[in-house]
Image: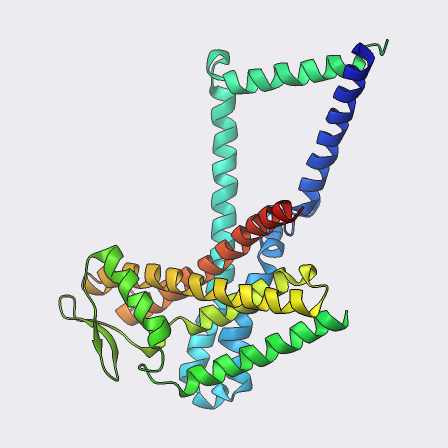
Length: 135
Length: 173
């Protein structure tokens, strides 16, 4: 009975680790740590960006919008530049928020860091269950 | 593979047809998207919009017209294409292909009405109280706001749909 319980816990732990690994890989455009945040953000929104450009620039150009002259060119320039600027701004804002949250976490006294402590305790329990003898 | 190619071909034809329809349609032809959008903007801002034949939907209170170019058809086309490509891995038969196309079309329509209503609800106070940005005209501010809201809406839709997709997979299982 005890042996079965420990084995089950080990299996659950392994499954959880596999799920965590899979989730890390499944993040849309989630590359490895070699990708800087801005490049990762561009990879992540590549499909919406491609479709946005296709509908607002490629299709009108294919329909001969370039003949409209300077008016279309000015519009096209704004459409071309603004989304990447927004991606960079959003990515920088996210990184800053993450860094600030990290600083805040480090500044918090131990008594206020209850969730993190509870998580560590849980991890410790799981580690103990993993190393428990399987008699 | 053949079925997926077929779905992509149907998608390309549908996108081309929608774009052509949008180019030749009048504001009255676009009642199916302008009507719900005007209603939703009215609900959000508390401003009633009345149908102005040949023009679109007009608010006398704010002197604001929701016209053909405000219909959000370009957003709907982009969302339709993006959603179909996102859900393409679910296609393994003709029926599932038709289901993915239909679901993508419905979702893109709903998203277009919602995102467009948000864009107009933001544009209304901006038009009433133009933002004093040194080099930008109110028209340019309106254009910038439109691009930002549409692109953000597209990215948000792209982030939200896989969650629903995973949910339906779990239900299927």
